[in-house]
Image (cartoon, rainbow, N blue to C red; front, side):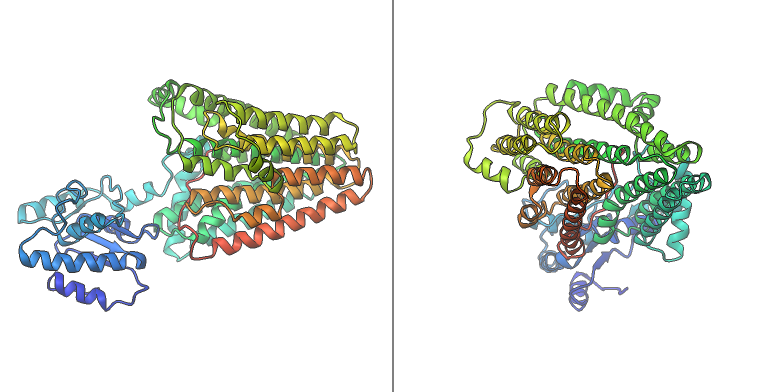
Length: 586
C-alpha cells in the first residue's frame, strides 16, 4: 500500500507496479466496511470493479486504467471534467472522487466496471465532518461479518439446503477460510467423501448402507460449504468453476453405481434402474439448460405464465412448495441417504425414478406453457447455443448442410421428437440385434440433421437438445438391457456417464461465454447420432455375445479419454472463464 500525493503521483506509482499484478485506487477519505472494499477490490471475476471511493483493475484492464488516469490528470489540470462529454452521467452518481471519475472514464472508453451490490454495507467518501460522522455511524451500526456470512449463502436454494444445511455450513465455510483452506480443497473433500459413501454402499451390507447414507449427507454439507467459502472469501477460479460444474454429477452417478454393485452382491441386479435414474436426471438437466439458454437474452421475454409465477412468489409457502416439487439436489440427496440407510437399493431407485419423473413433468409443463404464451424473439446467440447443445456429429451436420431448412414454427422439435421415437421404438420393439434397428438409426441421423438444418429460434426449439439426449441415452440403455449379456448394462452405464460428462462440459463452457467445445472433439466422438448408430451396429454384429460388453466398455473408455483430456486442457487454460456457478435447483 502506497500513498500518492495527487493523481499524477498515483499514475507514476501504478506504472511502476509489475504488469501482471492487480492494482487499486482508494480515496484516503474512504469510510466504510472492510467487506465493502473486499467486494469491490478482490473479486477475480471482473477486469475492473468499483465501489464509492475505490477502484480496482486486473492486468487486462491495467492499460485502460493508465490511459484514463493520465487523461484525468491532464483534464483536472486544465479544469475540464474527467470523463468526456458523451460519458454516461448516471454510471456512478455522486461519486466525484478520483477513483469514481476514473471508473466513469473507463466505461466511456468501453471497459466494463463491475459495481457490486452493497446492501446494508457502507462505502462513502465524506467531504466534511458532519458527513464523516454520519458515515461512521452507519458503518458502526452494521456488523459486516454478519453480512458477509449471510451473503455467503445462495439467495435461492432448496428448502432442505436453506434450513437443514446452510444455518451451520456457513460457519464451516468461515472456519475453512480462517485456516487458509480453498474452495477447491473442500470440493475435492466432498468428492472423496461421496466416493467413500459409494464404496460403503457397494459392500451390500446393512452397516454399509447406513454408513453410505451418513457419508452422502456429509458430502452434501461439504458441497454446500465449498460454494459458501468461495462467496465468503471471494475465491472464484477457473479450476473451481470446472470442479464445481462436474463433481456433483460425478458424485451422484458414482453413488448410483455403488448402490447397484451392493445390490448385486445381495442377489438383486438393479443396474438397469441405476442407469435409468441417471438418464432421467441428465435429461431433466438438459431441459433446464436448453430452456434457459434459449430465453435468457430473448427480446419481449414475458408471458402470462411467468407473471403468474411471479405473483405466486409473493406468497411465501408457494415458493418453497414449488422448489420442493422439482426435487432439487438437497431434497434428492437427503431422500437417497435416508432410503439407503433404511431400505434397499431397489427402493432407492424406484423412489428416484418416480420422484424425478413427477418433477420432470412439472418443470417441463411450466416451460412449455411459458414458451407458448410468450412472444419472445430469440437471438442468434441463443440459436447458436441450442445448436451446440444439440451435439450434432458428422452425419447430422452432413444432412443439415444439404437439406433445405424446414418451414414452420414447431417443425424442428417435431422432427427431433419423431426421430427419437423411431430410434427408441426400434430399440424397444424390434427383435434384438435386428439390422432394422440399424436402419432406424439411419432414419434417426437423417431426421436429426433435418431438425437442425435451420437456426433454432422457434418457440419450442429448446426441446431439440432434450429429445436428442433422450434418443441417445435411452437407446443405449434399452439395447444393453435387452442384450442378456453379462455386465452389458454396467458397461452402458460407463458409456452414458462419459457422454453425459461431455454434455455437461458443453453447458458450462457456454455459460462461461467461451462457446462450445471445438468441432474436432464433437466429430471425433461422433455426435449423438453417430454414437447411437454405432451402438445399434454393435448390437447387431455382436448379438448375445460377450463382445458387446467389451465393445461398449472400449467405446466408453475412448469417449472418456478424449473428452476428459480436452476438458482438462480447457479448464486449466488461461482462456477459461473465471466464473462461479450458483448451481441448478435440480
